[in-house]
Length: 437
Image 1 (cartoon, rainbow, N blue to C red):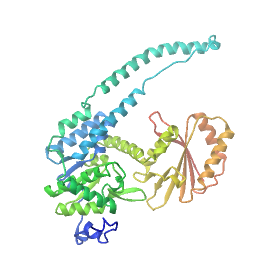
Image 2: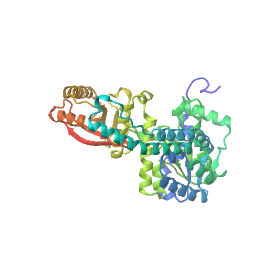
Image 3: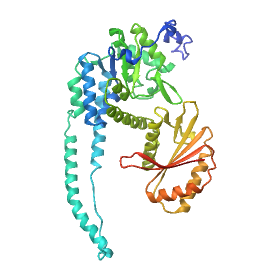
Image 4: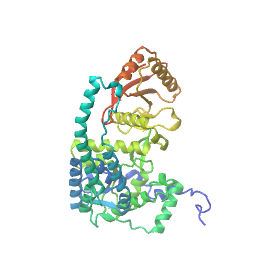
């Protein structure tokens, strides 16, 4: 019985993690620009799903980059990724169906006999009849679109593209046997070794990440070439992090890949960065980057926040607004942090961001009391060097009263900025007022 079986940790675990100690000092990973034309590219499941939320131009450029890599035998889809794609593809199509379905419009002014003699009411009814003709045509077209989506049977544009590109030699299974992979999984989980230990609570105990990693190791071992792993996964079991910001692959992964590949390099790139590296246009890269931000939001939101529709929409919009200003340095705060979002400054200081949603109100006293309450709550967030209160308002009337009150108030919290804005039709936060203490 070994020490793990006895419930004791191996005191020499570092020797097995880094068996070639001298390589720690002598190895220098090659840059992305150096390896891009002679490396293998391995795609994660989340990267394969991104085109379901982008436009035609993005899909075409993604296809062109993939075709070039397939032609030179440098693109790999791990078997685990293919299986995960089979499970998650339908979710993306269901989401698309739901979003399109909710675009249908209903217009009904209602019947109010008291207003029958009011000319404006009569005019509104006339306009309603005219508009409803167009609305019926519009809704009929929406129904036709839904029929197209509903009839997709593994022949949606993304699946069709992948079917044409990803032949048998592109999809690769790891060489390691099931018993060996189980032993490695147990060891990695016990010692919290990358990758995958963050998923240990899942039904499959996080074996998916390890299967993908073993495929990457096999590529390095057999080809003797560097690998770029394209993934939206930002978890700490793949990437070293500081202040919540992912920096670069865990050194355990870099070192293991170096040993099996005779000194080659391992990199992890977001999908947008991968497209940028391989020549996609700025417009396509930006579109994909926006989708990545949304993915970060969905992955990091605590489950209990999903029920708060208006507040959640406001948080998502402010999160994306901040992300554009501070890429990779914005994260949702912990439950006990007394704020919703945190920004990690380059100098190591933290900015706490509280997001509030104010629905329609024209009662000045109510608005003033609400502001005072929010400010007093922020006074308890002592761990942050500065604070931002971002208020999302529903309409211009509320906005006017709110900003008027803010202009006359003293802020009881030092280093506080209050920013007020609206949501655009596409859900983007638009700041229209800002004041600091």
